[in-house]
Image (tube, rainbow, N blue to C red; front, side):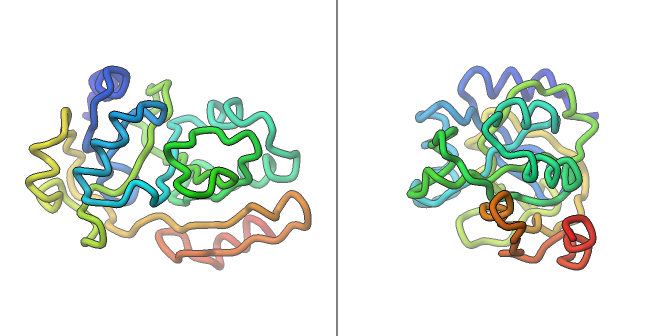
Length: 197
């Protein structure tokens, strides 16, 4: 059983957590804390200008946090989420700038299906728990030791599927219904096509 209370407490205190996502092990921190985001990126050895994703643990919370999304896009998200996908969305209000890197007009959104963390009521800035360019971690012991040692909380969820999320670009979806798979991953492009048409 994953301790959702300890996870949320760590995020709220400005800490960095290693946690089991629905795909691979991830790192999480408060998406509004510059200090926490800097620590997360330093643990990975990743340049801070590279974008990350913001993860919510409840789809309705994600929708409520992004009221500017259009009707068509919201309908697509209702069909796509929760699942093992990262969705790139237009971000006209420049929300969660620490996760957006050099492009504040784009937000990466994740809503996984994680029953053990469903009670977590805050979003997190999330990235994979590996060194930049390194292999994704399927088991906790695959997370580099220096990352585990440097985190404030480490949660073991056993062995995960090991395939990262599929990245879907929905930035033009509201305007003309166009979408693109930018990275094939845990959900096939064919399955995405069935959902989005």
